[in-house]
Length: 109
Image 1 (cartoon, helix red, strand yellow):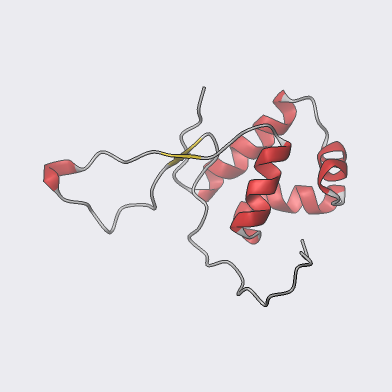
Image 2: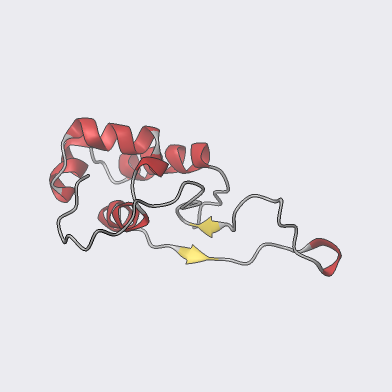
Protein backbone atom coordinates (compact mmCIF):
# COMPACT_ATOMS: atom_id res chain seq x y z
CA UNK A 1 0.00 0.00 0.00
CA UNK A 2 1.36 3.40 -0.97
CA UNK A 3 1.20 6.68 0.85
CA UNK A 4 0.22 9.74 -1.14
CA UNK A 5 2.39 12.67 -0.14
CA UNK A 6 2.28 16.10 -1.72
CA UNK A 7 3.62 18.43 0.97
CA UNK A 8 6.57 18.19 3.40
CA UNK A 9 4.43 17.85 6.53
CA UNK A 10 2.82 14.73 5.05
CA UNK A 11 6.25 13.28 4.34
CA UNK A 12 7.26 13.97 7.92
CA UNK A 13 4.20 12.12 9.24
CA UNK A 14 4.77 9.16 6.94
CA UNK A 15 8.46 8.83 7.82
CA UNK A 16 7.52 8.63 11.49
CA UNK A 17 4.67 6.18 10.80
CA UNK A 18 6.88 3.95 8.62
CA UNK A 19 9.57 3.84 11.32
CA UNK A 20 7.05 2.94 14.02
CA UNK A 21 5.37 0.34 11.78
CA UNK A 22 8.77 -1.36 11.45
CA UNK A 23 9.10 -1.37 15.23
CA UNK A 24 12.14 0.91 15.13
CA UNK A 25 13.04 3.63 17.57
CA UNK A 26 14.75 6.74 16.25
CA UNK A 27 17.97 5.41 17.79
CA UNK A 28 17.60 2.04 16.03
CA UNK A 29 16.96 3.69 12.67
CA UNK A 30 19.90 5.97 13.29
CA UNK A 31 22.08 2.96 14.00
CA UNK A 32 21.13 1.45 10.64
CA UNK A 33 22.09 4.71 8.94
CA UNK A 34 25.13 5.62 11.02
CA UNK A 35 23.29 8.61 12.48
CA UNK A 36 22.42 9.78 15.96
CA UNK A 37 18.89 9.62 17.33
CA UNK A 38 18.87 13.42 17.35
CA UNK A 39 19.62 13.57 13.62
CA UNK A 40 16.84 11.06 12.85
CA UNK A 41 14.44 13.23 14.88
CA UNK A 42 15.49 16.28 12.84
CA UNK A 43 15.00 14.40 9.57
CA UNK A 44 11.53 13.28 10.63
CA UNK A 45 10.67 16.82 11.72
CA UNK A 46 12.00 18.47 8.55
CA UNK A 47 12.58 15.91 5.77
CA UNK A 48 13.61 18.71 3.39
CA UNK A 49 16.69 19.29 5.55
CA UNK A 50 18.43 16.38 3.80
CA UNK A 51 19.46 15.84 0.20
CA UNK A 52 17.49 13.56 -2.09
CA UNK A 53 20.28 10.98 -1.79
CA UNK A 54 20.08 11.04 1.99
CA UNK A 55 16.28 10.85 1.97
CA UNK A 56 16.43 7.84 -0.33
CA UNK A 57 18.84 6.16 2.10
CA UNK A 58 16.43 6.77 4.97
CA UNK A 59 13.56 5.34 2.92
CA UNK A 60 15.60 2.26 1.98
CA UNK A 61 16.43 1.70 5.66
CA UNK A 62 12.68 1.80 6.30
CA UNK A 63 12.07 -0.78 3.58
CA UNK A 64 10.21 1.44 1.13
CA UNK A 65 10.92 2.62 -2.38
CA UNK A 66 10.02 5.73 -4.33
CA UNK A 67 7.55 5.44 -7.17
CA UNK A 68 6.76 8.53 -9.26
CA UNK A 69 3.15 8.69 -10.35
CA UNK A 70 1.67 11.18 -12.82
CA UNK A 71 -0.84 13.61 -11.38
CA UNK A 72 -4.24 13.97 -13.04
CA UNK A 73 -4.23 16.91 -15.42
CA UNK A 74 -7.39 19.00 -15.55
CA UNK A 75 -8.54 20.30 -18.93
CA UNK A 76 -5.58 18.76 -20.79
CA UNK A 77 -2.92 21.15 -19.49
CA UNK A 78 -0.49 20.94 -16.60
CA UNK A 79 -0.93 23.50 -13.82
CA UNK A 80 2.59 24.72 -13.10
CA UNK A 81 1.35 26.47 -9.95
CA UNK A 82 0.25 23.14 -8.45
CA UNK A 83 2.37 21.35 -5.82
CA UNK A 84 5.38 19.36 -6.99
CA UNK A 85 4.70 15.94 -8.58
CA UNK A 86 3.47 13.25 -6.25
CA UNK A 87 5.79 10.52 -5.07
CA UNK A 88 3.83 7.61 -3.71
CA UNK A 89 5.11 5.56 -0.77
CA UNK A 90 7.34 8.37 0.40
CA UNK A 91 6.71 11.98 -0.48
CA UNK A 92 7.62 15.10 -2.32
CA UNK A 93 11.36 15.29 -2.37
CA UNK A 94 12.28 18.77 -3.19
CA UNK A 95 10.92 22.19 -2.89
CA UNK A 96 14.27 23.21 -1.46
CA UNK A 97 17.26 22.55 -3.74
CA UNK A 98 19.84 20.02 -2.65
CA UNK A 99 23.23 21.36 -1.61
CA UNK A 100 25.67 21.68 -4.49
CA UNK A 101 27.79 18.65 -5.27
CA UNK A 102 31.33 19.48 -4.22
CA UNK A 103 32.72 16.22 -5.53
CA UNK A 104 33.54 15.09 -2.00
CA UNK A 105 32.43 11.50 -1.43
CA UNK A 106 31.77 11.97 2.30
CA UNK A 107 28.24 12.76 3.31
CA UNK A 108 27.63 15.09 6.20
CA UNK A 109 24.18 14.34 7.52
